[in-house]
Length: 332
Image (cartoon, rainbow, N blue to C red; front, side, top):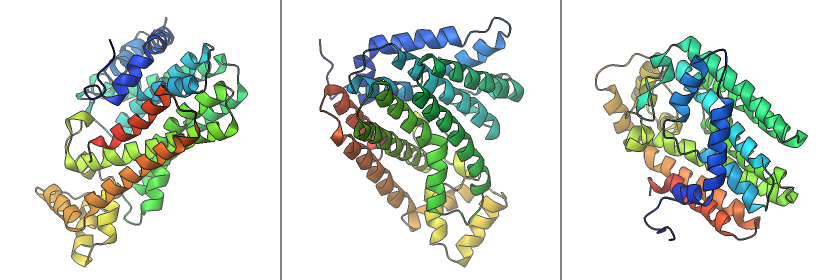
């Protein structure tokens, strides 16, 4: 029986279309996250990997390979690689951000400790490199290893840019490209490379992943002020963590002297009092910062869909286009 397209979310339809491959990816993840000598590794890893995430990034690798007609076994290894890289960055991010919750559950650093989170993250990065080499494809190795470096670079850039009111939209996009879009773009690009696709198709898959990742992160940053049960975040977490995301950058750019003094106090100096979050949201609304951010997220989603136009039409390509719509569906 076919899935009712209206009732089922795009990522769920894609998961159903890729069910055998995803099952193989999950089996490989469980096999490779085991450790004979350090039982804490599978404990910590399982807490995150079994937490009910959508597996969006590995699904993108599987879908890209399938859209390009790949029939070999190694898209499974690369999809698992992408999920390990993602999970490693989450473990590290939660330590850096001092987060207590992810996907509505306590973070690993809260349940265990920071040392365990950092070291298990390191282990998963190492495991991801072992998985990458299984495909025996130097170009694939280069793409995924470059993405890993870019992710770390994006996180470090965010450390210095996040609380600096001079941070502009260009720097914000650079941070987002690093910490989020790099893995989306690598996930789709390696699917095409593995399948031996034409260079225009490989470039299109990269462009799709890049634009999708940027849209995804902008939506996440916007929902931090709008609120959403799906993010597992409280409204204003980014404000409390003094992160200068796109809505704030837009409001700061239009601020008068009094408003700028408020942003200096709360973001640069970190002096936040009762009611400051409400005042921040009022300023965002006053300057249409949330609405302007919403429009930019939609524009990036449209860029992602446009990139797919060079791929031969198929049900999988249509689902990838629907994923771009789904990422911004909460904003429409």
